[in-house]
Length: 279
Image (cartoon, rainbow, N blue to C red):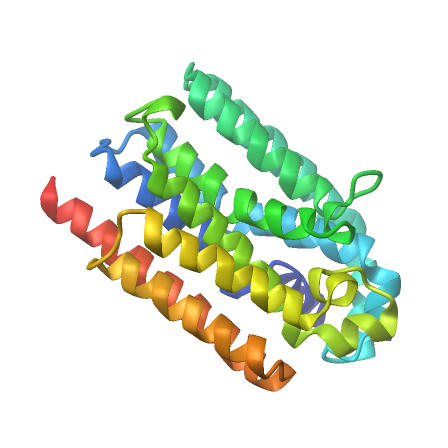
């Protein structure tokens, strides 16, 4: 049981537990929305429960490839996952229903729309017949939507409508798409070995890096974040993408990707605290 519990935790990706709640809080605090019971419910559901849905469904439908993939820690952990797959499916469907019910109970069209978008892309990113992760650049587009646009819109919906979102949200969403395309560079060899279709394996490592550079340069120039912490982050990501464009080394791309991820988290926390201090 202890071993199964550890595998279940591994399936839910502990590093991802805080991502959706943090982005949700970013949207919530940006419009000065107060806490309410439904806000707390959605915030909690977007943590571990949502991660079981997002990453659990991914592991179920990636099972055959994962058995061959050297990026997986051990074959034993992959085999063990099949024993908890039925439970993962049940929890995933339960979480999806609870999330949708929580949105309906808000009687808020923007919240309901955002939740529908989040669940749609979270599910069909991994699950056939759509399985967006196998169709670049939809793999990167899906990541931008499910990791940033939908969660931030959910939080913002408690104080605004979809029509009140500033253009900066769309530029940051594009930036997250760029980060995802960049992440496929570090996994290029492993993904190519098992026949995975990713941005890098289909279009090439330099194409993935170029996409990242273009996205972040455009975001930096036109988002209006110059001279701000967000702007520095956008510039930082563009520079890292440029280095890999010149020298597309997978190990170096891995370190740069982690730097982007940490930077994103730091900037998001900073912005949440800034909005809280302002209001």
